[in-house]
Length: 379
Image (cartoon, rainbow, N blue to C red; front, side, top):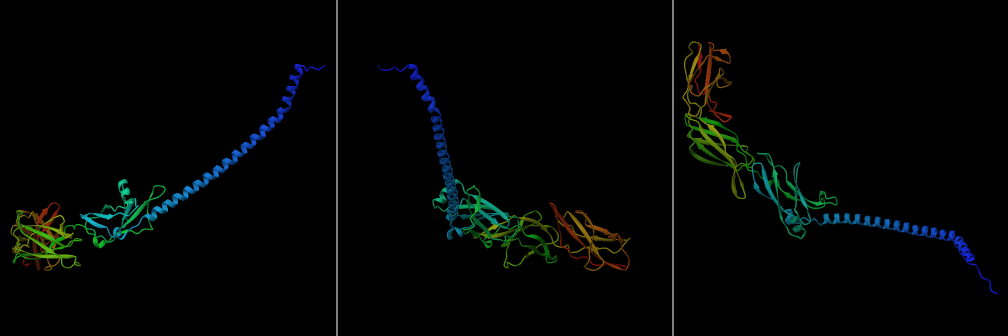
């Protein structure tokens, strides 16, 4: 007769078996989990290493690209000799030059001055495609200055940080100082160096301006009407001054002189600005009276356009004249009683001359300082 196993016994057996294998299962899961985690950690470490290698490779690639960019900037002979002056002014010039392939900008150097010329996107695209384009730059200078250095133009590239840097491995473009000029300013120190009242002639002299090839002079009468126009072309480049004989200039009026410099640029004369001066001849004669009542009377003829007259005196012939007085434009005589606070004394010779003066804006023009009065001897 078969024995029957109780349902309760089966349940108990199953329960016992389950609880007996639970620690083993847990240990297996824990061990398996650790193994999987270790594999994942190893994989992550490997991935990190690979990323590091990729980053290093990218960095190396960037550096190589930068090096390649610099090497690609090539200045051909056509580009290197392309710089020229397009337009000149008194205080600036506009230059142009051709571009090199793959340069993003150019640094224009003159002395301590540096100017960065950047290419726009369209220009960069053109030069990368091999198209040679023309760029321009404006450089400023002081008026009347002399340009003593060459202008150097360096190609510039953009590094990995986006900063502009000069390509030191490339050639640069040069604009020679001999090929640069400015429009000359008006001549300076315009004056009468010699005068001949009787002949009605004067010699006008002046200092030359930088880059001037000559001057143009307009001579006008007291009313401003142009009497004569003359040009003086400089012959000696080393000379710093020039002069011109002007006839029919008497001492009865002031004459308006307009003078300007010119230079030759691209085969044409380019003129600077006019400078206005006023000249007259020396007063021909000055009447002197005898010493009377402690004074000597001086008289002169009126000069058209004069705004004042200045009296000078000396006791040493034609030297060491001292200014005594400036009188108004309507005056035609003056009583000399003292010379620099010293009264006139017996036993001396006194010498005099008078200049006609004209004020124009903030400048005063005077007739030449020429001794023209006979000596007065006080007995």
